Structure formats: structure tokens, C-alpha cells
Image 1 (spheres, rainbow, N blue to C red):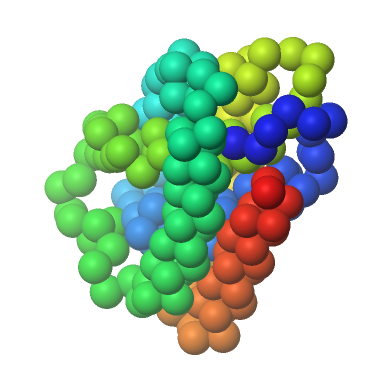
Image 2 (spheres, helix red, strand yellow):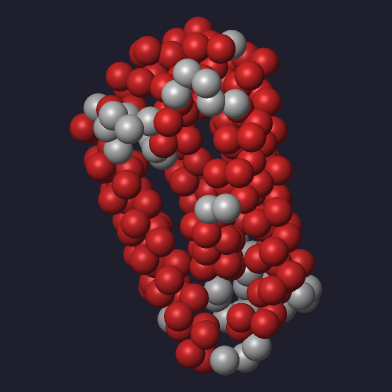
Length: 206
């Protein structure tokens, strides 16, 4: 979380969220594969499950956010560097992701249940909303928890658009997308972008 010292940088936020959502990873591979194997209907059901899981995590983060910060410098610094570390972690997973362990190849996977449970029980989603999205909550004119809720909702909307696009593309171009996301140049590019976001968080929240 940044200290409240101005207005929200909407362009920086949307750019960062776009990089996060477009970064190749297991969810991208899973949605692409399940759509290619079972069609658009199952793919969109999976997107619904993912969205609901993320929404629960967002509400939990917004509801408990004031408790985490509470004017405590130690908590502030912990969240600040936690956000940096999380973006570096995403950078590493983007580089290391080759698609070999993508869960999308489990023939009997049920889209909605897998998408919902995987995101509901994923502690990384809660950390993401608190430690990363929270870095952009800088407005002095409205409560931090409300900023987290609005910013997180924008992230979820963006994720729905990206995931829906993956479903549509996956149903037609599943194998081509799989090859694209495994390319070293693609993985390096997204990893570099995420490292840049981590650096931006570190220096802009001092």
C-alpha cells in the first residue's frame, strides 16, 4: 500500500494489471486447453468460476485491509515489500512457465468448480489484492478499503475480458497459443515487464 499522498494513478494501475493478466501462466494454459478440448461453453463456465473466486478474495481483502494497515509502519513496510516480492515471484513463474504441467489436460476437469475452488483457496489471490493492488490506493478523498474494492473490481473486469478472449481463441487456436506462450522470448518479455513493475512499486512507495 502506498501512503495517501494524492490521486490514484489509473494509467499505471491499468497498465500493471494488463501485464499481470496477459502474462503466460497455468491459468492461461488451462483455459486455452479446456476450451480447445471441450468447447466455448465449458470455457466460459470456467471463467465464471475464476471470477467468483477472485471476487470473494477481493471482498475479504477490502474488508480486512484497514486492520492490516492501521497506521502501523511495520505493517506498511511489510505490505510494501510483499508487493515487490510478489511481482518478482510472478516474473519468475512467467519465465519458468513452459506449459508442461498445465492442469488443462486433465480430461475430467470440471470448469466452474476447478476455476472457483482454485481461486477461492489460493492465498496468492488475497496477497495480490492486499500487497499489489493496495499499492495503488493513494487517494486522500475516500477510504482505502473502498479504493481497494474499486481497483480490485477493475482488475477482475480486465481478467474477465482477457479470460473470455482466451476461451474464444482457445476454441479455435488452442495449439498455436500453447506454442506461443512457451516461447523463451515471450516468457522473457513478460518477466521483464513484471520486474519493471516491482521496481516501480519499490521506488514510488518510499
